[in-house]
Every structure is written in C-alpha cells, then in structure tokens.
Length: 100
Picture (cartoon, one colour):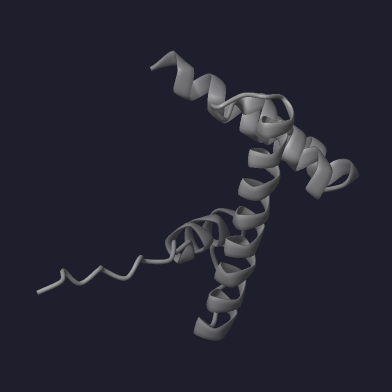
C-alpha cells in the first residue's frame, strides 16, 4: 500500500501582521478578509523574492543562497525608498542573528 503524502502547509503570516498592526496603531483592529488578503500578498512577495534570489545565486554560479543574493532580489523587486528600507532592516536582522 503506497504511503500518502502530507499536503504541504502554506506559510501563514497572520500573527505577524497582527503584531505589526498593534505596534503601529494599538487602537485599531483588522477584519478577517483583510488579514487573509494581506497574508496572500505577503505570500506572493515571498515567492517572488525566493525566485529572484535563486536566480541571482545561479547567475553568480553559487550553490548556497547568501544575504547578498537576497539584497539583490529586494533591489530588483522593490523600488526606491521601499527597497532601501527593506535592505536596511534585513541587514540589521542578519547582524543581530550573527551575534548569537
């Protein structure tokens, strides 16, 4: 009897969306439909970032994805100030992670 494969769970960013909302506007709430829409948007952005990062690593002839590949993907996907802020926050997160 063949083994059944488990269905892969899609990532869920709802708890993070809620945390960020409460940091910025503690008095506001969010509807479930809106939460699901933002979750879907973030999922799409993550898939695109993963794809661009992988392509950047392939062009650089590397087998391991590095922070520089992700930075390049963010620069390609996002424009101007959004890319600048995203790269700055990502660099800060990598620096904090590296200290541990």
